[in-house]
Length: 115
Length: 108
Image (cartoon, rainbow over all chains, first blue to last red; front, side):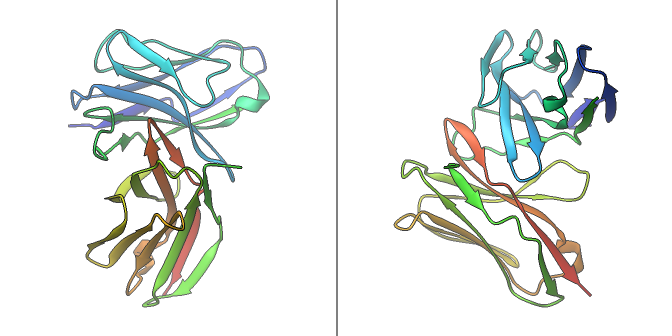
C-alpha cells in the first residue's frame, strides 16, 4: 500500500513551457485534490475531484487544468508555466468528501521552479 | 482578511516545555477543525481533528476550540525534539482552509 504518490519530486521549467504533475493513490479514495504551498500562505486548494469524471475548481485554479479518468489518478497540468507558479504542489486524497473530518492523506510533494 | 490566521513563528522551546499553538478564524459557520503536522520536505499528516467547541486529547496533544472567540489551539505537553515540525491549523466548510503554519523547534 503506497498511499499517495507524486512524480516528479523536483522540476525546473522555463516560462511558457507546459508539464503534467502526476498523482496516484491506491486506497480506492473517491476524493482527490491538489494544493499549492507557498511561504506565509499555507496550503491553497487548486482543483479537486469527488470521483472519476468529476472535477471542480478550488481557491486558486487559474493556469491549471485537471482531469479524473480513473479513481486512482489525478494529474495536474500547467498549460503555460509562469514564475508565479513556482511552489510546492501537494496531492491529497480521502475516502469521502471530508464529511465528519475524514482524514486527507497527502503525497510527498513536487517542488516546481519556473524561471 | 484570510479566513484562517496563524502566527508563522518560528517558535523555539526547550525539551519538556509545554507548547501552545494558536489560530483564529473568521467564519462562524466553521464546525470542523483540524491540526496537521508537516515535517521538513514532507507532506502534511493529520494530527487531530475536533468538531464544534470543546477539547480533545490524544496522548501529549490537546486540541481546543472556542467558537465564541473563533479561536483554536493545540497544546503539546512534555515536548520532544521529534515534535519539531510545522503545525498547520485547518477548518472545513465546503473546502479546506489552512493557516500559514507555525514552525516549531524543540531543542534537546
